Each structure stands twice: as C-alpha cells, then as structure tokens.
Image 1 (cartoon, rainbow, N blue to C red):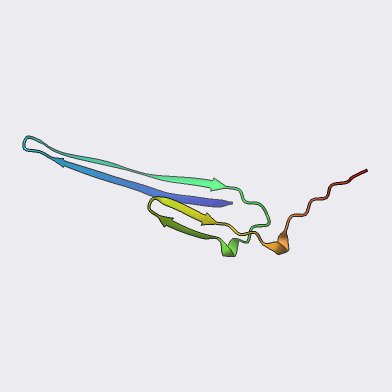
Image 2 (cartoon, rainbow, N blue to C red; image 1 turned 90 degrees about the horizontal axis):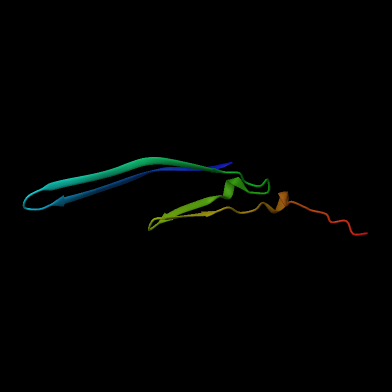
Length: 72
C-alpha cells in the first residue's frame, strides 16, 4: 500500500475603507493506493512543484510478474 497524506492551508485577507475581512480554509487529506508486488519500494521518488505532486514508482525487474497464455 502507498499512502499519501497532507494538509491544505489557505488564507485571504481583504481590507477596504469600511471593512476588514479574513477568510481561512484548512483541512487534512489522505489517500491510499494498493501497489502491485513487482514495485521496488526502496526507489519510489516524489516531488512537489507548483501544486503538482509527481510520483515515480519503478518496477523491480527481479520480481517481474510473469503471465502465461496457453495456446491449443
């Protein structure tokens, strides 16, 4: 299983001659994914850039899943 979790934080402040407003939003999140058995967990890499999370999940060639199709 691969679990990704984090927290969102957002705050906006508005000022005018007649009012002052502050809006705040926050919350945590978590998402889990089941991974195939041929994933090399020691080489998983993640980077976060400009609001995008990029995951690199390499396969372990030693544990390559083999499938056999029988032809008559």
